[in-house]
Length: 128
Image (tube, rainbow, N blue to C red):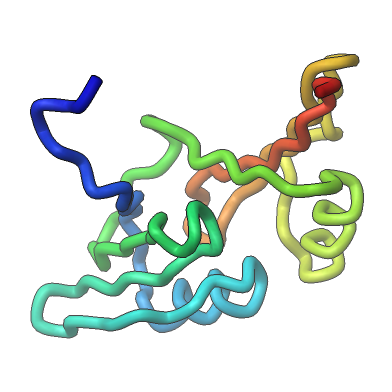
């Protein structure tokens, strides 16, 4: 059944951050996102992810005091959580405790960007 909003498949997740330059560098260099554009007049920029064929972007709004810790947590699927986590840890990314495993279902690893925004990796363990 078609949605009455006629979604086009795109999604932009937005975060508040203190420094756009630092944030762009971190998401590009640590997570491998691709810089799209920046509008200095409004303190906004966007980066593209590989999710859904590049239709999921992450936007950043520069503010004096970012509000972090509440709201949805972007959770990115990876082929192997342990390998992805080891790569992020080698770049000094801070994690929230050990990876959690729910046998036959999923592995989850929660981590933080430089402003304290929560992100998560997941690996599906479901068969079939």
